[in-house]
Length: 143
Image (cartoon, rainbow, N blue to C red; front, side, top):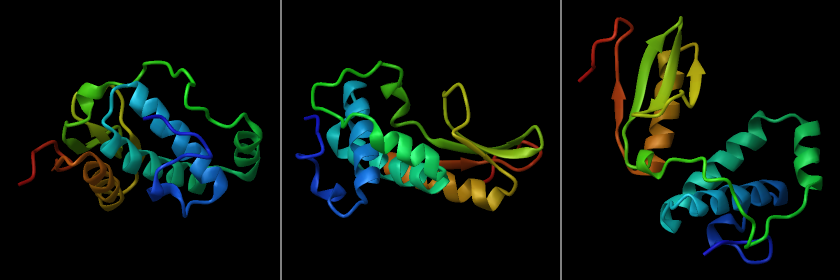
């Protein structure tokens, strides 16, 4: 069931208005890409909160002034629902630690330290109810 700014999941009620708006937009896009509702909500909240923390005030104001999400908005089907259950990888490449869902084309994020990469991977895996697979700097799988 898609949402709008007047009808949204209870889990979003304590978010700042602009973060809630972003979470609704993300959640609706995930639903359009065949994500189950019970997984779309925590993923959308997590991504919206991360977006808010990493965005500057101009980007936040610009998004806030955009049209509010509607239940019947059409979203491009760019996501890959097949990746939803895949594990999250932490590996070293090109002098940085990367976090990527298994079989995804690009990393979700990059970090200077393995600890930061692992923390992000755990967050993603928790939202997706999957596992983290970590590799050493020389490419060996850690157990």
